[in-house]
Every structure is written in C-alpha cells, then in structure tokens.
View 1 (cartoon, rainbow, N blue to C red):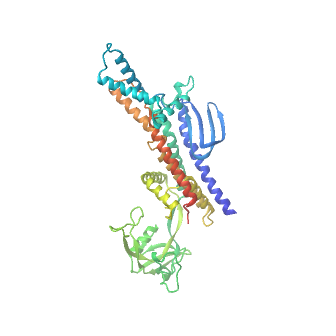
View 2: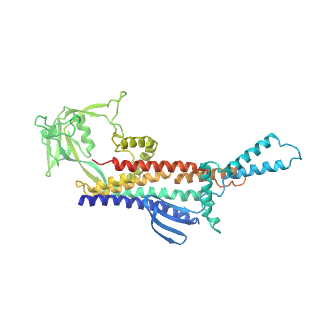
View 3: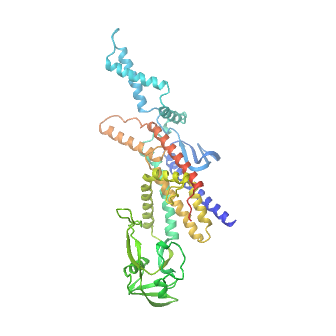
Length: 480
C-alpha cells in the first residue's frame, strides 16, 4: 500500500510541476500582451473540457482537463485579408477596367486576356471553395476577425510593431528557460551533484570480467587484488605510490597505468593511516570517447585496451556546485535537446517497432507525459533511495521538461511560438527594405498563409503523442 501511495505521489508531483511550467509559460505571453494593450480573451492551462474558469476583467482564466499544453487567446492574431488575396482582387479589377476601356468591337489583347483569365480563374476557384488548405487559410482569417469587437481594432495582435510581437511570443519560451535555470540551480547548488569520492564503497572479493555479467563470486574464482591486499569498504585513499589523492579520477588513472606492477596504497581507516601493497591485475577495458561512448573500429568491433584492475569502487557524495556550473548544465541540456530533434523521426519509428513488435524499447528514446509520470512514480516507490535523492530526481525531470519546452517552442513553425517570431522577423526585414528604398510601409505579413504548415505540424504532434502514450502503456521504459 505504501508503494502504491508513493507511486501516486510521484506521478502527481510531475503532473503538478508540468501544469505549473505550462501556466508560467502562458503568463510569459500574457503579461507583455496586456502591457502592450492587446486584448486577451482567454488564459487556459490544458485542453479539452473545462474544469474550472473565472472571468476577471476582459479575460477568462481557466483550467481544462488534458494537461498537455495551454494557450492564451489574443484578438486579431491574423490580418483580415492577406496580401495575396488583395493582389488577386487588384488583378481582377485591373483586367476588368482595361477591357471596359477598349473601343466597341475590338477584342482584348492576348496578354490582357491571359491576365483576365487568371483573375477570373482565381475568382471562380474561390467561389467553388478552392482547396481544403486555402479554405483553411481563409477560415483562420475569418476566425481571427470575429474576435475583434467594435472599438477594439487598435488592440489586435497583428497591428503591433514586429518587435512587440516578438517580445510577446518569446515570453513563454523564456519563462521555461528561467524555470530550467531555477530547477537546475536547486538541484546542483542546493542538493549538489553526485560525485565519486576517494572513500571506497565496494571491494570485490574475486576477479570478474564483463563477460561474467552480474554473477556472484564462486569458490574457484581468483581473489581480487584489493581484497588480497586487505583493502576494505570505508577506507579513504590518501596516496598511491606517494602521490597525494584528491579525486577518484587519480585513483583510476594510476591503477590502470600499473598493470602487474606493485603499488603502494595509503588509506585512512579508523582515524589512522595504513600503507598496503597491491599488484593490479591486467584486464581488458573498452576505449571510451569524450562522451563516455565505447569506440568502435572500421569493422564495427569495440576498441579495447589492457589496463590495471584491483576491484574497488568509490562511494558517492553530493557536492554543491557554483552558479556558472548551473548555466553550463543548462547549455549542455539545450545542446543535447537540439541534437536530439533531427533524430526524432527515426526514433519514433523505433518506438513503433518496439510497441507493435518484439524489439526492445530504447531507454534513451522519447517518452510522453504518461511515460514521464510513470518514471516519476517508479522513482518515488523505490525503497532503496533516500527522500533527498527522490526529490532531486523529480527536480531534474522538471528541469529537463522545461528545457524541452524552451527548445520546442522556438522552432520556426506554426502554431509554435517560433512560427510567430519568424513571421514578425520577416515583416521587420520587409519594413527595413521598404524604408531603405523610400517606399511606403508594407502591409503586415499574412502568416495565415502558413495554416497548411500548422495543420501538418499539429497532425504530426497528435500522431506522435498518440504513439508515445500507447507505447508508454504497452511497453513502458522502466528504471530496472
């Protein structure tokens, strides 16, 4: 019963943390929008059926049933008519005017007839409904225009200068970035980062290779050099061959370099120093790159090297980090997320194969909110880790989620925030070019024309979410 309760608490912590992250993301949009005078009709956390809402001033604040996102509803997101539609109307008007000016009985010139045909064809196709996507563009314009009440024309989003629109749309992702920094600061500066100490946490009784797996020592197995020399868990290594030891990395480097050679080990045990002699055995180890990944040769075989081995492992302790380390960690997390995005389609294919086939699920692959909740519940129900470790794991999950929200929302695709930012930047460039040429300020960029892209992006995210949720139920990623 306690395990089930702990699991439920872990899930709720992530759900609440995610809801708070989404809510603050939308506040990042809401505050600058109101400061710039845009009328905001709704501020919602979640999608689907309304659970709670309250009208305050001109804005309705509420919570909906599905905590997979949120939104604010600003009036006039799109110009009422795009530049392309205006051009078509102008072409048709010009063709009609040119034809009416011809003398009686004279046929229009071929180029005039061609222009008129294009305009009439455009008008005719518009009358017949055009295509699904062109209707979608016009529906977006119409829906946007319907939100603008009498007297609110000057309070629309699209009428703002581009830099104001950019500030509004960047407010959400920047809020997620700040949350990630706060969470990582709590994790690294408050709880500290786990690091290997110079105190022995384990001493193997026998020599076991990687090929032996996790099996226990058998009576015929050779005794490990550390156990043979008398080293014990709890010993703190002070020096090796006279070299003062301050970090565990020194221990591994010196031991690996002394394969088959006597090594003097001074340890602190019970407040007294003891000097022991150990001869490291020779073992074969994989060669790792800077990221800790095993290297492979041209044929795909793992690259190995011979090194010294005595059979000891360190204890781990949390060491508080500095704020620059926090910023560095956030930067590394953003870099990993950016590197992950191009591989997402291939990883989703792997998830589908694992879900509906016999392949194993990649533990480093994508997961849904359901999967994150399950991992949090699993962490909370583990009896062998401390409360501090559980809390720090939750904070780490929330920090990573906010980094993901930051990066994802900056993609230059509608309906993501980055799509609106890209539109505003393009409009800024057009305005600057017009100013340099001494031309009038161009009309606002009609990003409603990108609604077909929005449709594709939304379908992709819905399909991805459905696949990952099914996978997290059918074949979830677990910690064990």
